[in-house]
Image (tube, rainbow, N blue to C red; front, side, top):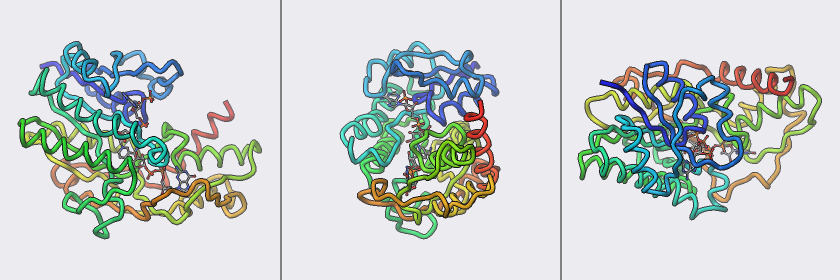
Length: 322
Ligand code: NAP
Ligand code: F7E
């Protein structure tokens, strides 16, 4: 049987790594693409998969375009990665975030139910749903407490995924993924903001780096490892929810120390705390327990934080030098 995937959010960080993984496994890969005019496909080019994926015009806020994309692609696996995914901006764009990140997921579920209810679905849920944490290590049974419009929108999408599974019998799985980063991470997220600045400071293009809360702690992994967990979820006989994390938590401050240390600099000499980057409500700490993903999916995070930081700094240095 031919294996056909439709990926929403294909131009994002995870969309690029997932395309690469699925193409290597022999899938025909289609991507839903909003066509924004600017160059949004640079990540696919960096991974050398741009010419191998088939783009279909569409937007997750438009049910009809999703129906057409499913009919045209004849997808057997659907990965819903599309989102307004930046937490910081979700306070300024709460309605848009709800429409894309929340209702967009329902459009995907509904389109699959209408066109091909046998297709398997991956919903990109998030550790942001744990927000003000209710357990020291968060797993699939930990209660949720979102702290941002983004977290609340993801939580709605998550429960709708569970609901479509239970009420319509869809093979819909939800990945509770903790922060995952890479050289393809958007520049607005703190890790890439740091590694890009480290490269600029090292090469003399910039002197300081302005950041918000240095004490926030995250469980950071490598995106290339995490897309493999998404795929594994859809190969299971039964749909389910899985926490995907490294099991280690590190502060923004420690991340800075690692990244500046890569090029022989001290973060204390360059980082300036700027209240403009503080959030109206913060998620202070996240630490995932990926035991179920390990036990059931045979998945584990292979890339250490140190290796991830080195990879990101190196790539940003190359980009600037190039
Ligand atoms: P990302 O780089 O921000 O990618 C988001 C993608 O969604 C982009 O391709 C974007 O297209 C697309 N998109 C935005 N609005 C859309 C719309 N209305 N219709 C169709 N596509 C739209 O995010 P990511 O880091 O790859 O994350 C992938 C998914 O996992 C997201 O849902 C995110 O919320 C979730 N997640 C991420 C993490 C993480 O740490 N990375 C952790 C947990 C969950 P444009 O480029 O054209 O805007
Ligand atoms: O912030 C702090 C900030 O924007 C991480 C998304 O992929 O992961 C991501 O959401 C921490 C926060 O990621 C700056 O306050 C300090 O505590 O890199 P971030 P995020 O908010 O954790 C989750 C799992 C997702 O699902 C999301 O889609 O870093 N921080 N100073 C800063 N953050 C930013 N962006 N910029 C700063 O200057």
